[in-house]
Length: 112
Image 1 (tube, rainbow, N blue to C red):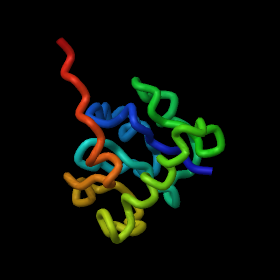
Image 2 (cartoon, rainbow, N blue to C red):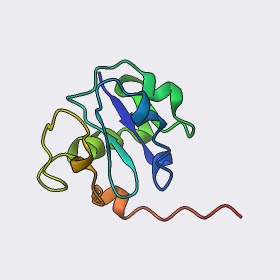
Image 3 (tube, helix red, strand yellow):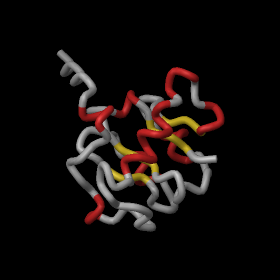
Image 4 (cartoon, one colour):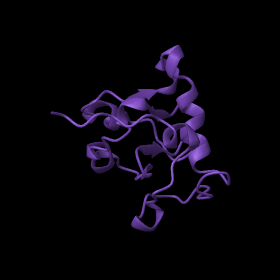
């Protein structure tokens, strides 16, 4: 099992989950955060601290959000960042790149 970051994180990136993660498996993209599925230890701390309820365990991912499992995985692949499995979210693995699904997502309105 792994945890998955979904659409509510886009343009929010609270980063409380990054601080809570004991293995540094949450990486920063341009508009959202991504969990590396092979580095996640399934502790669930990220899910409990997310202020926008964007994080789910893959085995409880609502059907409408299932594509986000592939979005998180593909972010690390050669077609997006090429990070592979870096073994921890160090500052050098922060990027302005995003998976095409995220990059094409409509911008969220600024609060009035």
